[in-house]
Length: 238
Image (tube, rainbow, N blue to C red; front, top):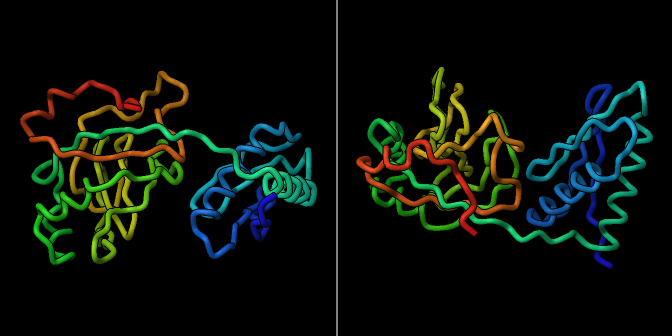
């Protein structure tokens, strides 16, 4: 039996609860809220529409005409007790390798990021491709893989004037986070490159091939190879 993960449960409007893991261990909090979300999704609780986990919290959405915040809170506490007793279930993460063209028309903010960090463009690329990233949660738009960012010296500021449209496949950084845009959408993150791979397929379920806990690693390709990968879909390599 593992020690209980401390949580706080807050009402979020009339039809949702926000469950926040509050231990001092960020990795433990992340694992706990994702395990709770999976438990709620599979528990077939009447009135629960879904559970959306993030870095340290999960939003539990429910139908207030079928159940109540009090009842859902009780289910949440029951789920946490069960998970703390049996431990967080392990899942073997899959690896995704992502080719990226950095800079130029594909990464218009690369030089800006390098200047902010006091590093060369080559050093920024080297840090961005230096490790595999854990996909922490899926964000907007369209299941964007939200990840902890590269080991840059400083957090990356967002753009003062967000772009009205960022292309699908844009590889961006902001703060201490990294992301890929699965679909074209407005964005205020710094775009440092672009992958030619198709990330989102509206004809498939799920729409994106990865899920939280999977690993993603970037590698640089020359601009001349962009079209070589065009039309290919992002797939797990391991």
